[in-house]
Image (tube, rainbow, N blue to C red; front, side):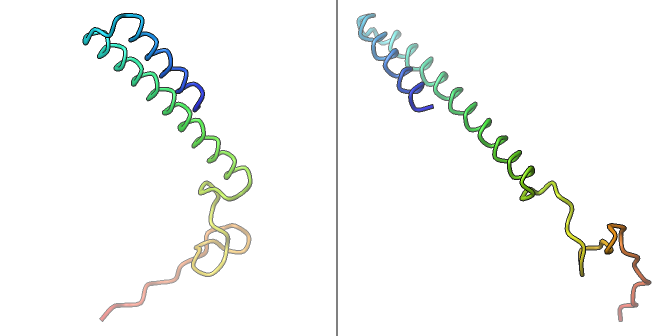
Length: 91
């Protein structure tokens, strides 16, 4: 990611230098370079986030797993939801 962003900066600087440094050219080149760097960085971070999430789920660390059975989990020993009794009156 760093290499691609650096390449975009080098091309932008070279483009401004070759085109004489006109103000309109500088604004256009810098705007395009900023858009390209933002797109590359956003794509990298999005792919990294999805990869980390998939890896956590595959290893059993993810939020996609149902809660383990036990007290307060609402799931019985065999994975069937635990039966609830009548609620005690408040008062």
